[in-house]
Amino acid sequence: MIFLYNAEPEHADTWRALLAAQVPDLEFVEGFEAVDPARVTYLLTWKAVADIERYTSLRVLFAAGAGVDQFDLSRIPESVALVRMVDDSLADIMAEFVVMSALALHREMPAYRVAQASQVWESLSILPASSSRVGVMGLGQLGQACLAQLRHLKFQLLGWNRSERNIDGVKTYTGPDELGSFLSQCDILVNLLPLTDSTRGILNRETLTQLPKGAGLINVGRGEHVVEADLVAALDAGQVSAAILDVFQQEPLPEGHPLWSHPRVWVTPHIASTMQVEGGAAVVAKNILRDLAGDELLHTVDRQAGY
Ligand code: NDP
Ligand code: OXD
Image (cartoon, rainbow, N blue to C red; front, side, top):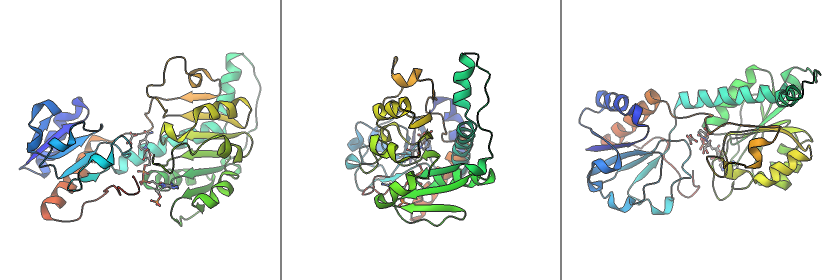
């Protein structure tokens, strides 16, 4: 029973030890080159596997990330379960990033950065968080974790999701028909959708115009959710006052891209959150044990829905 690890090399030894403690019979192998693909039973990888059909004994493909848009789902055989990364510490770290970003937008930090560059000493509105409405698109593991932390700061909370959700203290909206009403009330919009055919390009000229004038945007979903040229136009027109962007259509963000130098854009290099070694190994080990026992796996991807 071979577990092929294709994630951060610096964490390989810790993964090896953590998995050995939970699943002693597992043979841990690091890197695609190290093993005959036909012998691999479980595979953990960030990236799509070019020759997936050669993994003829594969039982579970573990995505190292929460998103699975990097995989071509049509190429993964039906006999292979695809599991995405769901771990409390990944959600906690994402919530930290979103809280920090929401506070930065609420307290107009991008505008103060612009003022500092010109040595302008000028105060802007000083209001409590309870005066700002924060809306989260995508009420899954991460969206809900963010809302739980934002609630402590007394922001007014809204959420938009494909299926109906009832979340204490959050005004929720469902499906395409309610997207406009949701957007029209978001002073700060947080994108935490998965990237699918239904969500690609969802933040575009039309939807950005539905936000209240001067709204802030936090994109921690995927770059392809945003039509970047439309966002730059909305920023230039003041329709969006500032954006904190962690993900981009092309990563790394190309040299000279207008988002690098826009005065009211903060760029981070896809670091809002990531799998943590202890949590990641624990959830993978748990799923391997479930697989061996013939139990249903946790956090499998719905291939039809694409996430
Ligand atoms: P989940 O699958 O738990 O949640 C996704 C949510 O989005 C679900 O509630 C789902 O609705 C909703 N959704 C899906 N499609 C639509 C749609 N068309 N319209 C409205 N709502 C929709 O995912 P996670 O919360 O774990 O992760 C979300 C995304 O965050 C990942 O896919 C990844 O892209 C991104 N991410 C980014 C990171 C970063 O560092 N920047 C780190 C980790 C993740 P329903 O309840 O109906 O299924
Ligand atoms: C993920 C990511 O999907 O890091 O986990 O973006």
